[in-house]
Structure formats: C-alpha cells, structure tokens
Amino acid sequence: MTSRSPVSEDRLAFNETPPADQRARFGDRFVAFLRSLGYPQTEANELAFGFLPDLLEYDPSSPPGYPNGRGLTMTAPTSSLPC
Image 1 (tube, rainbow, N blue to C red):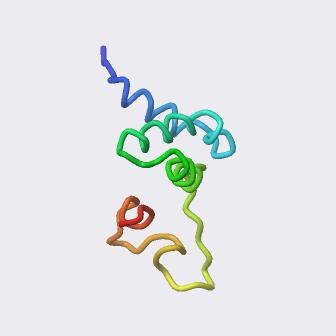
Image 2 (image 1 turned 60 degrees about the vertical axis):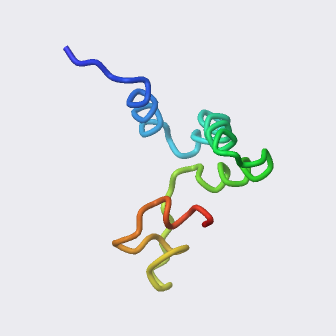
C-alpha cells in the first residue's frame, strides 16, 4: 500500500489535466500561492495567466532560450519569473 501527500495528489491531478482546462481548474490556486508570496492581486493574476496553461512554446526558426523554450541549463522558474 502506498500513501500520497496532498501535494503529490495535486501534482498528479495537474499533470493529468488537459492544458485547455488548467486555468479554470487551477488558476485560483496559482493566484492564492502567488499572493501568499506577497504579490499584489493584479500581478498574481498576470503571473498565473502566464504560467497556465503549462506549455513550453518553441519556434525552430528562433534562437534557443527564453522566450523561445528554455536553454538546457535553465530551470522553469529561472526562465519565467521576474527577478
């Protein structure tokens, strides 16, 4: 028997959700998390909108790196969160 934490259950549910449904299903949670980090409501909404749906766009005619995908050494937060 295995047990899963609520976080792993959330991650599993998120990964199983089609990108077209991610904003509706998880948008409020993303905003709440960003608000808990101190982001104002408007900025939290904008950031959540940027994160969802969770897609990595790539244009082969453009050079690699943000915003055209990520470089091999870049993590997701590094490439998408403002410093």
